[in-house]
Length: 248
Image 1 (tube, rainbow, N blue to C red):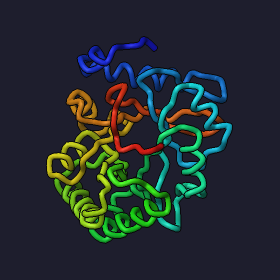
Image 2 (image 1 turned 180 degrees about the vertical axis):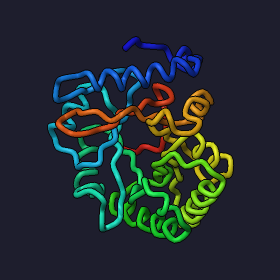
Image 3 (image 1 turned 120 degrees about the horizontal axis):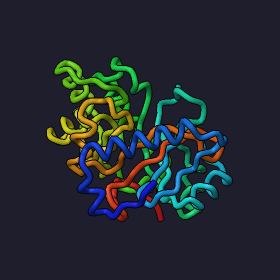
């Protein structure tokens, strides 16, 4: 892929954004190798739902990735090993990488977005943040993993985040949202999230419009294979982007 300066990246029209993401998706779909580890200076982070291994960390470092994003979840986690634990956290940081975290527990189901779940997810995220010695000032993202857009749907999502904020209030952690441009806009405008991680699906509401605002901290790219596992690479807003990551 062509390399762009930060200024040119910020000035690209919506059509170029779609071309970038679409070309990545095509590139992945036509690759025949078992691994497709992306090397691009704009790609700073990778998220994975599986625990890391040393060989994976070595490969990720070799291609210039700076941050590993892992998951917080409830005890009945949706995938085995999905939840970040202290030993894995320590291994990532000892390898000179930064950490990011996102809370996801069936957040691809609209039924998850209730006040009760917001309270439960907020409380569980604080337990895991303490277990992982997550420093104050860093962020905990909460997933909104769907194309919801109606007033009713947005109202439920905002109620969920009100409860998340009530639980995290005073903790020192910033609340981030992973979701569509529409959801990012609604939550940031209402003071219910401080950080936006723009989800990969370009068909979700307001992807292109929100990308052009440059108010996002990360943009997720389509899922691919790297290091023998499914991962998502993520564009950072700038070479020195701050998106709630933490490390030594």
